[in-house]
Length: 253
Ligand SMILES: [Fe+2]
Image (cartoon, rainbow, N blue to C red; front, side, top):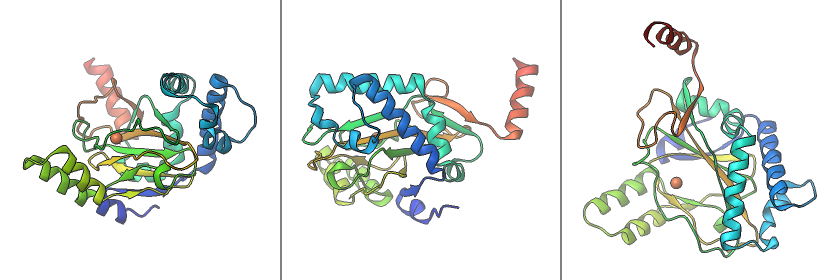
């Protein structure tokens, strides 16, 4: 059983896959989808992903590739159940036995030198605080090839300063001062609470970052702007919920 002491204190931690072969299979499937879009041979996903920038895709072309990859993965692969299976013991301990999963996965391909970065932000609000984000790198990530993340204390301090009239710049500085660059080998994931601030710097390494992110929550926990069925699907229900839904369906629908 994973230890959640660090997660409880910081709002995030790095967890090893509970089922590594499921994660390997998912990476292999995403690799196959990527190759079917841009071509390429070889059987080594790590080298294909790390060296992806050498293909010279930039700007609109890169974005078009990303969009195509995301939609083909969402059509052809059950990414939400594959990630859940890979980290099932940990995620179940985190959210319980009735699980809602984000319907579509996001895949980020961040090439060296690309200044187009996600701004420093946190997902909740507008998302609910009762969501955990699984950030799953498909390659080994470190330094600027990775993302940075603050913690519960640092984020709260930054948010309270913003509420007291501080600027977004000050907010970013406080977040960054309390942040670390995540070092995560392929085979592990960072699980973080939706309230924790995070962002990314320009990747100044010579390898491309590939990472996916997907959200899980207890089916019966509060929802934010992103609701059930529109953004989340029911992934798993407990035996009791299954019977309860059956009664509701038969007698009340
Ligand atoms: Fe985010």
